[in-house]
Image 1 (tube, rainbow, N blue to C red):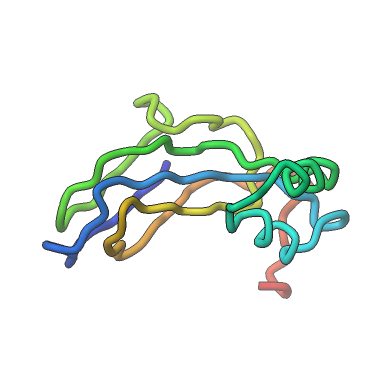
Image 2 (image 1 turned 90 degrees about the vertical axis):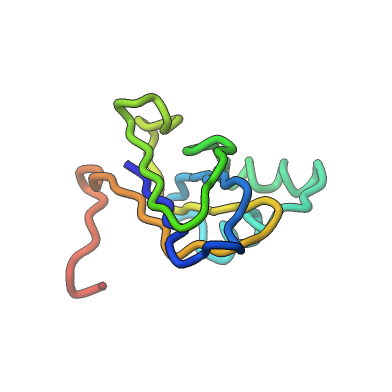
Length: 121
């Protein structure tokens, strides 16, 4: 389940939003490496280097139109969420062309063995 909220943005909301996810094993790939490849502007050498590290971005929510001052909910059952069976450790939200989002919520369940102890939160 993904919720994209444009409430309080009545004239400055994005025309559309795209959400991508990736799974990066924290034992092998740092958050900095994931963030570096999430910034875009990659050439073929960058893509190859990221693939060798196991960083591959995939769509969770394909480009979807937004409306002003509304909560947009996308459900797996409705067929809106792509790649809903893949594990995700990081997400990136892209808006086009520009505008404001009040909040983005992405719901899921932790995979067995990947639960972060509460002492680390």
